[in-house]
Length: 473
Image (cartoon, rainbow, N blue to C red):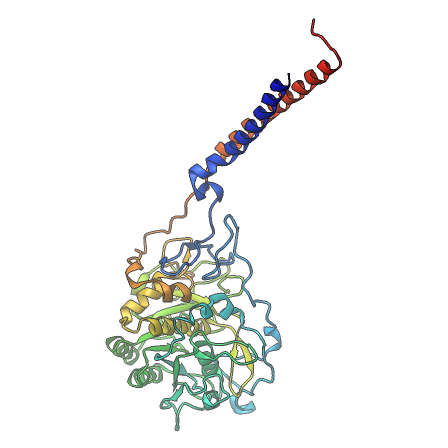
């Protein structure tokens, strides 16, 4: 009888092994799709090419360069999003009371950690490959405070002062503070206190003042500013202040920049105002039009492409938005409650698409620092093709081709970048895996395990009965 008991024990072990095999075999056979439902996004592996879809706003988008747990409904909150931005003084695109109260005062507050925008975009992950060295980015706006280029400034040794287009002098005076803040987002160095830095801390900033002391501008001033940026050696130029109407001089300046290999990046709408119609130069073909995202991934009401319902204009591609509709959007980036160094030192906070445009310009500088041979068309394509896609046809009316991704834009090999997607081609996400096979296998395994347990108990009962002299019949 001991042999029978041994065989019964072995049968129980074998059944348990088969049970485990039955439970896992369908998942192994079906591959990763059977284990996880629908990944929110594919991780941005170096050289892997463009990434998969991000949840459409207002869902929290996936952090560029950071994998998301399979099946997650949305990405975790962006690192650093809880930074005390409310305690910082604000910067705005204009300073209407400059005549009464003077220029913007320096900030007396500093942060000891990166801002949420810098942590979200993870530009530091590509700094071993590129910091934007050798690339000049023009900031066309209210000027850049010359003290930022001093030995202790955020742009130490990397600030060039171009001509002022309004008034006299150079562009080293920034009464509004807007241009200085944008320059910090583009190329501010990482300070010893660990506070916010720019995306491309090796790039050089060319300051071009094209507004008056209050931050107001005209199409003629912007046209002169763009030409000054091109003639000053910039490869990238962020146009900080948009105008509401197109003008021949501005259109010609945009063409002048494109013909000489300069990428223009501009906000798709004015800061703090509803974008009810295209603004310029963002409305011209060839200019990268950018909208801003809030820390929760949504496009704020009033931003270009945004609104109470989250909708916007119909996708219109590079040809421009239809008259009477919201401005065209090519890319999106953090633009709400961002932090950077400002005029006179210290840190400020600000919100609006102009700040998102500065971050896209910084990402472009990182790409050129790694691949300086790219043409302006190739650079623009790289930024669009490697963006984190929205879960819709691209360009999406709210976020364009998606959220700019410096990690993938820098690390993807030029040959690995896919051809631009057609505006009618949606990004397809695989359906959830069929879990019915796993459930059936688990139910069958449970039944087999129950029978095996009964066999074991019967064998034990027979063994005990024989020891007591029990006889059948």
